Structure formats: structure tokens, C-alpha cells
Amino acid sequence: MPTWNRPGKKIIPDRPFEYSFLDDNYARMYTTETQLGKVMSLFSVTAILLACMGLFGLSSYMMQQRMKEIGIRKVLGASLMNLLGILSGNFLVLVIIAIVIGSPLAYLIMKNWLSEFAYHTGIEWWIFAVAGLVIISITLITVSIHGIRAMAENPVKSLRSE
Image (cartoon, rainbow, N blue to C red):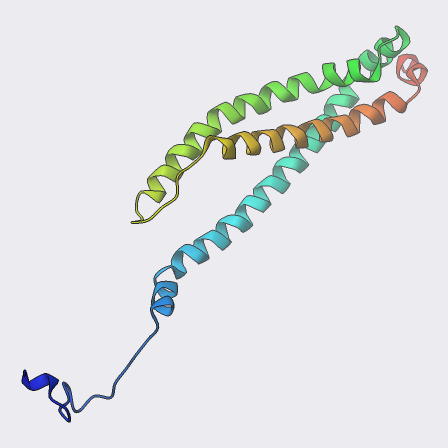
């Protein structure tokens, strides 16, 4: 029997026994990732809010610039859905271009970051599809708010201004 394993013998007699739980050790190892996740979530929410405010302002400005066109189309019998399609078309093209550029870039960044971990999850295509659909929905809702407001106005006001 080795000397360190005999009953009554201690390995390091001057030092008290210290213990820790394995889940606490793992939690300490991943504190930086947890903090990074919180900071990234805060920045993501801030960026989304700023983008929505910019989109809201840009669509408001565009509606003011195209008020005569909207009035003429209303007088000629355009429906609400027809006008909303015309007005939101420009925004949708820009949003789709942003999705096409941003999705592969986000995929590469996430793949690179996840490759640093021993155990990691895969990145599925549907995550990007859902994100794109949410972005397109937010865009359509924002532009529709201004489009409905522009449709509610009397076309005679916008056409008589000159």
C-alpha cells in the first residue's frame, strides 16, 4: 500500500482541504461568454430600435414627398393594397438586399465563434429565415402605418397645394 493512501496519513498536512462543485467551475469558466451575451443583447436591441426609428422617419419623409402621387392615384381609383404595394416596394428591395448581404456574414462570424468551443451547436438555415421574415414584417408594418395615414387624407388637399 502506498504511503499517501494509508489511513491517518495526509497528502499535504499544512493545508486544509478545499473543495468545489463541478458546475460552479463550469459557471466560472463561461462568465465571459455570459457577460458577452448580455452586452450583445443590449446592443442588438439598441440597434434594432435605432433602425426602426430610422425606417419610420424615412418612410414618413417619403410619404410627404410622394403625397401628390398618392393623391393622383387615389383619384384615379387605386386601392389601398395597390398603394401600399407601390410605397413599400422600395423599402422591401433594400431590406432584402440587406438580408442577402447580412445573413452569410452573420453565418461566417457565428461559425468562427462557435468553433472555439469543444461542444457547440450547429447553425441552422431556418434561424436566418425567421430573422429575415421578422425584419420584413417590421418593415411592412412601419411603411403601412404611414401609407394608411396618407390614404386617409383627402386627395384634394395634396393636389390643391400648388
